[in-house]
Length: 331
Image (cartoon, rainbow, N blue to C red; front, side, top):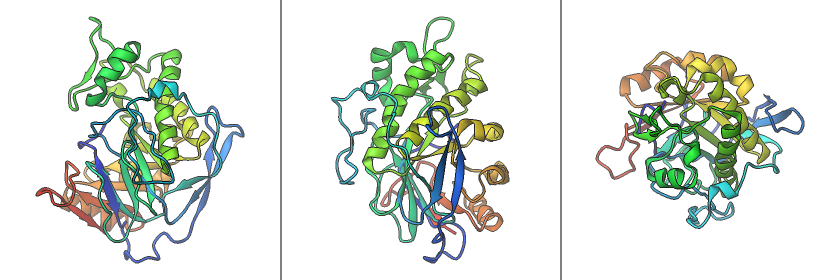
């Protein structure tokens, strides 16, 4: 699960010497095929300059309609129901990974001009991507954003996980309703909605998406299973690859052994130094692991242990410059 309140925050320079040569050489890997792929596998290339966005604290409508040619355009269109978009079925092509050891910033608490040296940025799906950078689009795929409760309860009440009394099951840490991925039919319906958001990210100009709360099943009081989570991620990976964007596993070391089954391309890991998990992610995803730390000692440890990876130090609530709590550092 998320260990912080996610919001738009730019990821800074990864560990290394921090100069412009870091991550300049693209690398190519082959992604495992996912359900819905037309050829069973896709080519994935790491490019040095593109962009990422992500945010969990946005208070905007669930639909993204930003034009990919205008990063300043308001991405929110309150007249559009994401369910009308449907899961993407066209697009596809080469998928681009974040540049290895590229400067990282994590901007889920609000978008701002990236610090010097940043090559990779993660922002909320309701924010526009950062021009000229590698942008990752944050999508809460397994739970409902608190400001979107009305959308789910009024438009898709059957897709909200319910307890024995018929009440929505709530994640107590984040006060978010869990989405019901318990059956193939419900996973398909949810994939149409979340897939529509992924399409919006691609149309806005994002190169990748990170799907949050993969481990929701562990907070479902036994109503959801790991298999449910993996099967839903497989659908979302297919949706992402269909529109030509890479897709990240977000946290959840317990599911790393099923990365090939899920079809995920890289990893976004929060506090992996704190929990001694960084090596587990690296064993599966190699240099395609983006690390976010919220403590100075943990950040320093990560920089020492993984000098070839993108690592950023941020404040817990991912605030923006000018806020008294704002913290940003890169190694």
